[in-house]
Length: 135
Ligand code: NI
Image 1: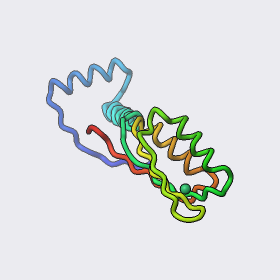
Image 2 (image 1 turned 180 degrees about the vertical axis):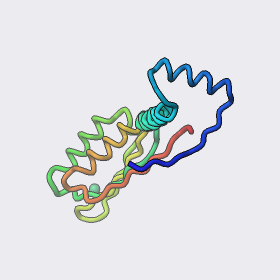
Image 3 (image 1 turned 90 degrees about the vertical axis):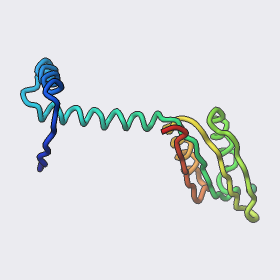
């Protein structure tokens, strides 16, 4: 894999602490130690994202005549009752329904709910929009 060289500036005291730390950890050069730190940080921030608290809406369009979708949707909403704030239902025509679900909780749980709903037979389209309550 090709690499790009970057210059990093350190205060002497910080560099000296860094050198003794990486020596203890068995690194033979600074580059590999810095790369590992960067990788760890990227993974940690990814994990934090999945665990972060979000609030959002899931909008779905479904055909209530297909495959017990109404029952299955209700079941999924009860399974996530701690996260769902409210649901609104609009009868669009003879068999098409629009539902907007306002949901709040861990991003991973919110995404799971959204994916499970969208996977139901009868749900034609679904769109999840989330935002954070704190940054
Ligand atoms: Ni309806």
